[in-house]
Image (cartoon, rainbow, N blue to C red; front, side, top):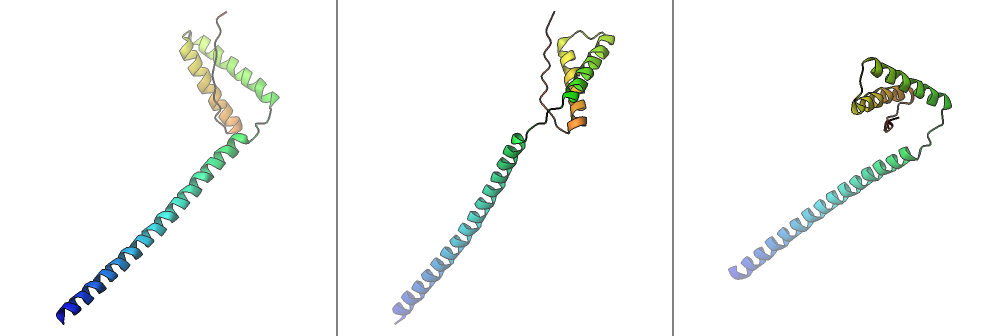
Length: 119
């Protein structure tokens, strides 16, 4: 008599524990799936935004090119007055002053690679 009751209670406990475990697993699965999909959307948005940024055409400003040439000449005259002859320092000065100048005009930070040729 108690044997059947004990088996019945054990079966009920096992079924209850299994139901709780399956429910908990499904909840965790849904939460993780939601987080993975959300992360995927965020990453996709970041990649699309970068692609869109790099695909924007840069307008051609002939007058800006003339201003940049004048700015570089002024920067080189300033370094000549300070008697700076080290090429590394010259490149650094041109890169920094030109970077600030272009950012002030276009609100962009281009890659500036000064090249000095010995004559």
